[in-house]
Length: 218
Ligand SMILES: CC(C)(COP(=O)(O)OP(=O)(O)OC[C@H]1O[C@@H](n2cnc3c(N)ncnc32)[C@H](O)[C@@H]1OP(=O)(O)O)[C@@H](O)C(=O)NCCC(=O)NCCS
Image (cartoon, rainbow, N blue to C red; front, side, top):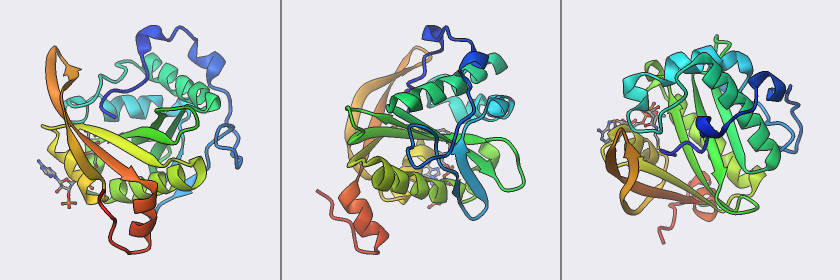
């Protein structure tokens, strides 16, 4: 998700008023589950993650191909409160990535519904560069896609990655996303338009891939 759906300029809600404690229930709209990887967990963002996310996601190498993240602690606190409100509406899900032995999130996976009911959605991800190449992405992505398909009911997950974002495209390719085409001049960053690769994962292919059967490319 190169274009983060969160728009700081439009958010006038105070962070403290909205960052309610999140319950973990089977209804993801009421609270996200904690999902365990081999050396990390995925969980709902907490207000206390703001400083870590600010440090991890605002570096040049992480942010150069995504919409500009918030630039202040307050901005990230507002973003985190917004993720909770949006999840309650049933339109959006954000998992924080917390490596083993750490308390705070160092990255995130986002899912945004593209139609009522979440049958098709767009997803995106970003992580502090010290965690790149560690295997956390691929394992975390599989947990998130499983969650989207099995719990949320997504039939199609789309991702967009700037053509110049070699790592983003490599990451999508390696988890089995299918390249559908190039969206020309579809992403504006720092006054410059970028072409983006459109990637998709279909629930039916994902289930086959999980069972070890070669996915059918339509
Ligand atoms: C996207 C992101 C979460 C992926 O996590 P990661 O740990 O870097 O991903 P991985 O290392 O598991 O996978 C990346 C793959 O791309 C490959 N790759 C790296 N540079 C590449 C390039 N220039 N061209 C093609 N492939 C490349 C890597 O070799 C790796 O594949 P391999 O494991 O088979 O060797 C992380 O890079 C990130 O946060 N990037 C900044 C934010 C961003 O661009 N998000 C994507 C928005 S769609």
